[in-house]
Structure formats: C-alpha cells, structure tokens
Amino acid sequence: MPPFSLMSLGANLLVKSLGLFSSASVVRCSCVAPVLKSFSTTTGGPPKRPLTAYMTYVKEMHPTISRQNPGIKNVDIVRKLAQQWKTLTPEQKQTFQDASSASREQYKLALEKYKAQLTPAQTAALAVEKRQKVAKRKAIRRKKELNSLGKPKRPRSAFNIFMSEHFEEAKGTNMQTKMKSLRDDWERFSATQKQVSFALSIKSSSHYGSVPLSCELPAVF
Image 1 (cartoon, one colour):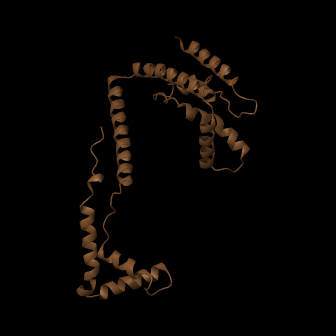
Image 2 (cartoon, rainbow, N blue to C red; image 1 turned 45 degrees about the vertical axis):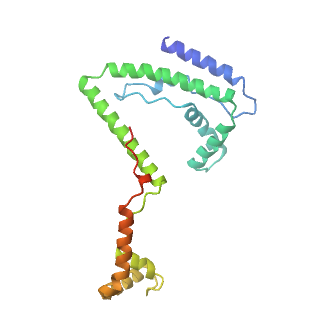
Image 3 (cartoon, rainbow, N blue to C red; image 1 turned 90 degrees about the horizontal axis):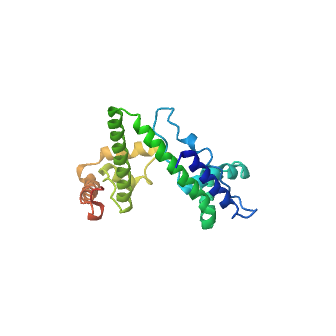
C-alpha cells in the first residue's frame, strides 16, 4: 500500500476511535498526520524508531499536562501520564496503538530507502555501531541484575574501618578537623594497635573475593 494511502487509513482509524471518547476525556491524538516528517532522511542519518503506543500518548498529552500544572516537574508529568494511561479503556488506547502501527509502517519504508542509498562501507559501519549499542545495553542490564542480587561492595581498608569506628569520638568540630585528628592518631598507632582494623579489612577482602554464586550470571546472548 502506498505511504499516503496508509496515512489516510491511519487518520480514518483515529477519527473513528475519537468518537469512543467522552466529551470530558482529555485524551486526544493528532500524531498520525505528520508522521512522514519524523522519518525524513535529508539529514543523512537513519530514520528514528517509531514510538510505542504509550510513548505516543505521553508525547501527545505532555503539553496539556504542563499547561494545566504550571511549574510542575517533568518527572511528575510523566508519573501523572503513566497513571492516566493505566485508567484508559482498551478502546481509548486503540487510538494510540493505531498511530504507533502507522508510524512503524512508515519507519519500515523509510529504513529500506535509507539502507538502499548506503555504500558498502557505510553499511558495515552501521552494523558495527549497532553491535556496540547492543553490547552497551547488555552491560547495563547485567550490572542491574548483579546489583539486584546483592553483589558485595568493595572491601574497606584498615584505615577506613578505623575511621568509621572512631569518627564520633575524634577531636574537631567539622569533617576536616576530625579527619586530620584520626589520621594523626592512626599514624601514631603501633602495629599491635592497628591489628584489629587490619584483621577486619582482611575479613572484608575475603568476603568480597568469594562472590556468591547468585552473582555469577551466565553470559547474556
């Protein structure tokens, strides 16, 4: 189906869906008509990926929430929109799902056109960039999984342990003077006096080295 016919179809679906909303509803969607502009390749870069139904809703309603709540923080706007999205009926969400589907079709056409004009070297460079992005996402996801499983923190030095245990009783009225007092005390200590802190540090290092099996995740493919 030609692109503009697809656009017309998407617009008609939106008009029909809008009839399902009540007059009091704040849900509107005018995002299908300009969809071609989002996928222009005149800048030389690849077309932008289409928005999901939810992100289409957020983009459409964000200005309205901002106008209705002057001074509201962006994070609060997103939180409010997330709550509103959950309350929408399937019929109301269908409007934005149709808009997202139309955008995906236009994206596929624009992507094919973009790839057709690339040289072999540009195609290879694009493939490398894609692999790097995938690897980065995997690394971030792996780090989050390790943290959620309770990966131990790095061990503390003997001096750090000594500071944490004696900070409250250290001489001084602020952080800087207390730190200086503790360092002076530590340097005056004999090896025997430091032994307790060193023992705790070694124990901490031993615990860190024996990472629980739950933290050793298999490679992500």
